[in-house]
Length: 385
Ligand code: COA
Image 1 (spheres, rainbow, N blue to C red):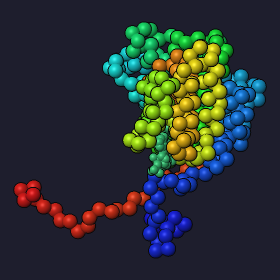
Image 2: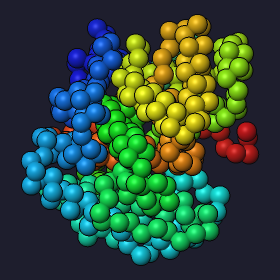
Image 3: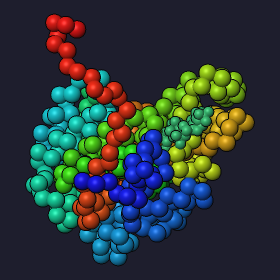
Image 4: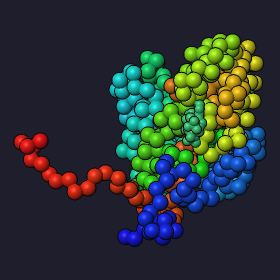
């Protein structure tokens, strides 16, 4: 097969771009990430409007169906989300059998893969079946996280409840205060803000898998694997661990100075696309401050703020989405190694929307590699090496 001439140099050789930086691999209607202007929109609606006015349920519908739901569409969508909050019984057994030191992100990735054994439409990759499967996965993600958290604490999972919102039910199942309006609104805003984000590494992964016409659970399991790394979703946990390591606002400047001398990266800082600031960080900053003041534990917010200012004295690098979400989730009481799974609980809606978009106009995603190794090497029998 010949290469696309628009991706070739004058000599006809395909262009190599390390890390695919600046390469447009996909056209999408789902989210627009406008780096220079620090803007993000879902289906054309600015996330600043969504973060203040809507719920994760409404945003999930928007991402999956390309329009805001009417009252009756939202009621039906909510009912289906609520109805799917329970896991198949063997999933609880699976979570119980995992070694106790299994990190939650691995437990979640494994459980999502295992859910495929019990999904009644697993091999059906039609758009309608994939939308139904997406609803089931969106519902099941927080249940897996919370059930695993309880099990590794030696406790029984807390049953999901039908009368709470998606965000409140997450807190309820984690044994956190689901009746606290600030906690619930912060969690909901977090879910809304992280639901989709252009062609990030995990979303790209989900589309590569979908482009082979594999099923939704396969694509989402692969996306989970990509999300785990500290250069992607794992940065929220790394940020909180960094704040706990610094521990004292008075030590922030020395910590940051030393990080720049030793070339240690400051977690939660910098972004491949947003070079002038991440719009999501503005909302999470406000929530972290509000919860820190409410709990009289402003220290972690203060330290984060100081880290961000200290970094700016060295380089023009700004907090990304993971930076303030770290103290915010910490204040809510989410265990640190559950931060990345919480990210996944939100992003599952975006991943699903991308899988559907990929199926809708599919082409196998298959780039090339440039061979830069040796040539004309001959096989040497093992006895002569
Ligand atoms: N701390 C210190 N220096 C940083 C930095 C950070 N968090 N992020 C970027 N830099 C520096 C780089 O070392 C590089 O320096 P150089 O020009 O001297 O080589 C310069 O800023 C440009 O950064 P680069 O890594 O090329 O940017 P990128 O667009 O490839 O990477 C990230 C973006 C997100 C991978 C990077 O900023 C990072 O590793 N951040 C920390 C991890 C994180 O928070 N990830 C979550 C992303 S949402």
